[in-house]
Length: 190
Ligand code: IMP
Image 1 (spheres, rainbow, N blue to C red):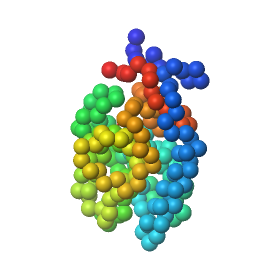
Image 2 (cartoon, protein in one colour):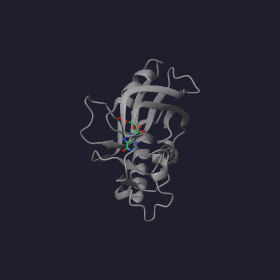
Image 3 (cartoon, helix red, strand yellow):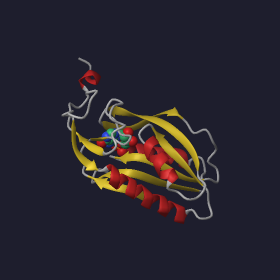
């Protein structure tokens, strides 16, 4: 049976969805704080938010509404080579940015930083396009898994290194629309 069929369509009693790691009310509260911080840091600049699809789409739309200054949006879509639950650091660009980055104040908006390999690749890739500044805002940071200092300017929550789903995060494209972030305790896709 394909793994995707083993994921439930109904998660109210779905044993694959484990304990809540971050409650939706805490997410909302923290996003207000991050929005206020970004608003204060970019008083005289218009940040370009670069969302990393698909996981960061929800976070970016909520975050942008908490920023009380003009912002612009762009998106990238990347796919990391590796297993479904581990990245290898080799990244394929599926959708590149629409706009130019030169002299822009760019904030990469990520859903989660795990090993940090995807972000390290993206940062180098975007830095080569001469933005004026390049910062990172990630909703979640898994503790203790990064080998180098990633210089993350804005971090929503530090979480234990378990696999999680919800609020944009998926397993085989499912569970993104859970309101809270949960542990995923189901069968891991190979
Ligand atoms: P990294 O390169 O190891 O930091 O992995 C980053 C990417 O892997 C994220 O942008 C997610 O797409 C995915 N990822 C890492 N951990 C999780 C998780 O716990 N749940 C869902 N996706 C994850």
